[in-house]
Length: 195
Length: 192
Image (tube, rainbow over the protein chains, first blue to last red):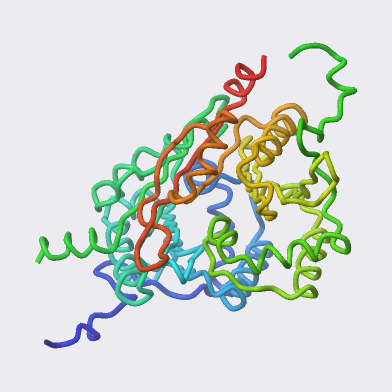
C-alpha cells in the first residue's frame, strides 16, 4: 500500500492553513472584532472591539499557549486565489491521553462561506486531527441561534451530544448551548463512502 | 425565598460540612495523599494520575490563589463533626455575562465516601451560586463509571443534558462523559 503522505495537510482546493502574520494580520482581525454579528456567532465572550495593537498582543499569547501548553493548534485561513486572510481555525483543549479536543472555525465574510471555504477548512482540520494528531473525539460548541453552523457540522457528519439548557444569555433572552462531535471511526466511514 | 433572616445564616455551612479557604500551608498534606490515590484521581480527572510532592501541591495551590480569578473559586470541605479536611469543591470557567459555571467536587478521604458529605457540600455550592453569585445555571461533567457521583448530583437536582461519547480512554476501553445541569428556577423550586 502506498502512503498518503503526498496529500498536503494544510492546502485545500480553496484555502491554506497558515501561521498568523504579525505584520499584516492584526488589522484584519481587529476589523472582525468590530463585526458584532460575526463575533456573537464565533464567541461567547462579550463582544468587544479591539485595536490592531491589542490583536497583536493576542497573537503573542496564542504563540505562547501553543508553545507552553502543547494543547493547541491555531491556524490563519488564507484564500488560495489572492492570499487574503479570510478566517481562523483552531484545534484546542487537546487531551493527549484520551485523544479528545475541541474545534473552532471562524469565517467572517459570508461571501467566502458561500464559495465553500468552510467545507474546505473542515476537511483539512479533520484530516489533520484524525490522521496526524491521532485524536478520537472532536467536539464543537455552538449556541442554538447559530443555525447555519449547526447545519454545516451536521452535514459533515457531526452528531449533537449535549444540550446545555439556557447556557447563553444574548439579545435579551436565553439560548441553549449545543455540543456536537464526530468520532474518528465515523469520519473514516464517511471517507470510505466518498471514495 | 423565606425571609431576610436567611441573610444572617452561614452561607457556607451545611448539615454535615462547611466550606473554608484553601490555605496551602495547612491543606497541602491532605491533597498530596489524595493525588497518591489513583482510584480517586481517575474518578476526578481526565488526565493521567500522578503522585504529587508536597512542594508541588503547595506551589500549585499558591499559584491558583495568586491569580485571584473570580471565574475560578475553590473551597476546602471540612466535616462539621471533627473539622477534618475531607475534600475540595469549586467552580471554574464561570461566565458572569452568560450566567453559567462548571462545578467540580472530590471527597479525598475515603472514610467519608457514600455518606452524604459530598451531596451536602454540593448543596452549599448551589445555594452560593444561585443566591450570592446570581448565576442562571450550573454545569458539571461526570464519567459514566462514577455511579456514586451521578446519584449524588441527581439528589441535588442536576439533570442529564447529554453524553459526550467515548471521551475517556482507560483500562483498554472508552467511556462516555455525562453532562449535567441545574437551572436557577429548578433549584428554587426544590428549595422553596
